Image (tube, rainbow, N blue to C red; front, side, top):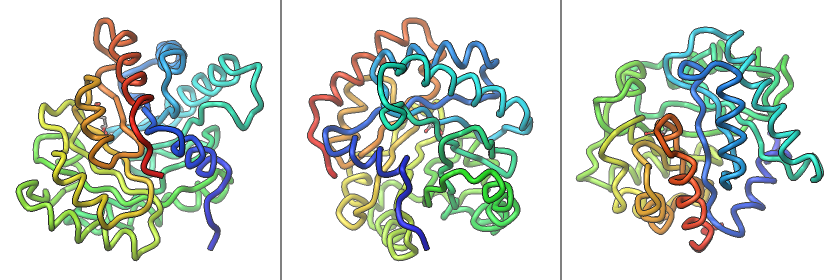
Length: 264
Ligand code: 1GP
């Protein structure tokens, strides 16, 4: 079993300085040109990672087009720097259609609190050959989804973990740790008004020493910093990238995270 590959190591290095802001681009919401433009603005605003994926993505060629367009941007925006300094473009798949050989890496995830084994290991087995053939770096990740209102929760047939009982999240985090998942994503649900609560993040951070990613409903510097101070290494911003004036808001988030202490 291999340890962290180059993209993961680059992220780990980056996290030693401060928590990282990641921009999530869902190919369902963006044509390739618009995705490239958004990625460029996000990188210029200070994000350290571009995630590409979504829970309802069915069109793999659209995913390829978006990833290729975003990759062109990362090469251009960071042209003066070595390839190892470029902002990585990493897949965040919701299903077997989420694999693209043009990406730098994939968050190879298991939806740990799904009630359907397909989302825990079935889709992973079906998609694994594509990842193998593509030869892209795989980053093992546990995925925990909170709430019942998001598309991810519905499609993933999630058994939502009560946020009033942080000890239950701790148990899943320990399971992810002992299963060797080097990354754990706590998902509040895209567009939610209730991001994953601080006490849940803190409880998980106590027992989980891998990379902790928090997403869902992060739209302000305050919510981003709250997640980071509670234990997030990476804070994901998705929906907000489609709102008016998002660059300004994103800059506020990245600069606030830039002043937060790292966990790594
Ligand atoms: C969704 O956690 C991500 O998978 C991002 O959520 O769209 O609410 O930022 P938002």
